[in-house]
Structure formats: C-alpha cells, structure tokens
Amino acid sequence: MIFCSVAALAGCATSAPRIDPAWSPTMPISQEAPPPADGSIYHDAQSMELFSDPRAHRVGDILTIVLAENTQASKKASTSTSKKDDTSLGGATLWGKTFPLNGGKIASLSGERGFDGSGSSSQSNQLTGQITVTVAQRLSNGNLVLRGEKWLTINQGRELVRIAGIARPQDIGPDNTILSTRIANAQITYTGSGTLADANTQGWLSRFFNSKWMPF
Image 1: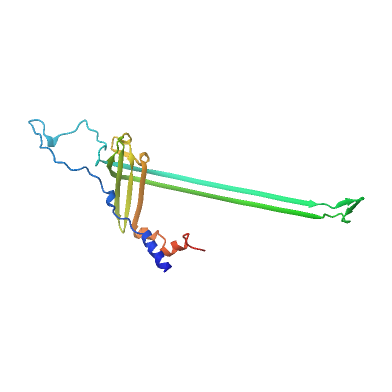
Image 2: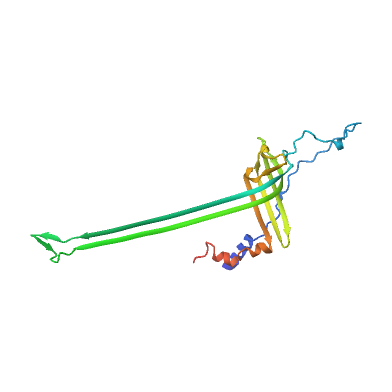
C-alpha cells in the first residue's frame, strides 16, 4: 500500500509540462475598423507612421526579452572550540606531617573537550537566450505586465520557457528589447519533458529512499 502511494506521488512529480491557457497571449478587444479615408494623395492602406514609437506600450504589443541571468552564491562556515580542565587536591599538613604520609594527592580531576566543525555550499545558475512576449496589462503608473512562453520540440523531447514580470517603458530599448535583469517580480521557468529529461531524473523508488520520509 505504501509503495502504491509513493508511486502515485512520483507520477505527479514527473508529469510533463502542459499548455496553460493562462499563459496565452492577451490581445486587445477587436473593434470594427472605420471606413478607409482615401484621397487623391493620401491612401489609408499605404500610410506610414513616421513619428510613432515602435516600442511596446499597449496591451497586445510584442517585445523581446533578452535572457541574461547569471547568479552565483557561496557560503562557508568553520567552528573550532576546545576546553581543558585539571584539578588536584594535595594532602593536608598537621603538626608538621603531611597526610597521607606518602605525601601524595588526595584527589585529582581532569577533563578535556573539543569540537571541530566546518561546512561549505556553492551554487551557480546561468540562462541566456531570447524570448518574445506580449504586454498582458498596462498598470496605472504606466508600467507593463509582460507574459509569454516558448515551446521547442527537439527530437524526442519538448522544452518550455516561460517568463512573466513587470517592466518600465523607459527600460525598453529602441530595438524593442529589454534585459531580463530589468524586469521586476520576474518569474522564469525552464523545464522539459521527453527521453533526455527522463534519463536525468531519479526513479520514484530512489527518490523515496532519498526523501525525508525514509526512516533510516
């Protein structure tokens, strides 16, 4: 019964990423286009916006996020303590004589304690690339809520990259790109499924023996 429960939990833990409708692009509400205003010189279908800002600033606009994530963390601790005690009680002297008569010690006590401990930890992560997302919402202060995902199918596996966060319009470059390090509350997900992902994942029985539920 226990192994069946563990197998069920492991099956949920290794489930492949699925398409989430919440990550679908948010497009503005379609409106009926006004009739074209054609004239002898101006043609609406061939108009060019010479003074418009090409950078994303409205809901549904598209911009490219340049992934430049590189984090490193390290921690090291070392502790060493020692303590040594030595106590002795000599013989008593009475009428010029020392008791016990052999002049030895009545009692002696000694103790020694020591502790040495050390630990270290280090971690580094790096993620580079590009992903094009859409503006899902424009906040009252002008900041843009960005959200998007990219699916890649390579041979026998699927790779998923998701990103969401808040960006300032002034941080968007003239080429309509923004660094991922300039996005607030960024949520970046990189995962995959398929043969390679399964080969790099422990089996459910191995995860059970390495989990906190293992009593030994």
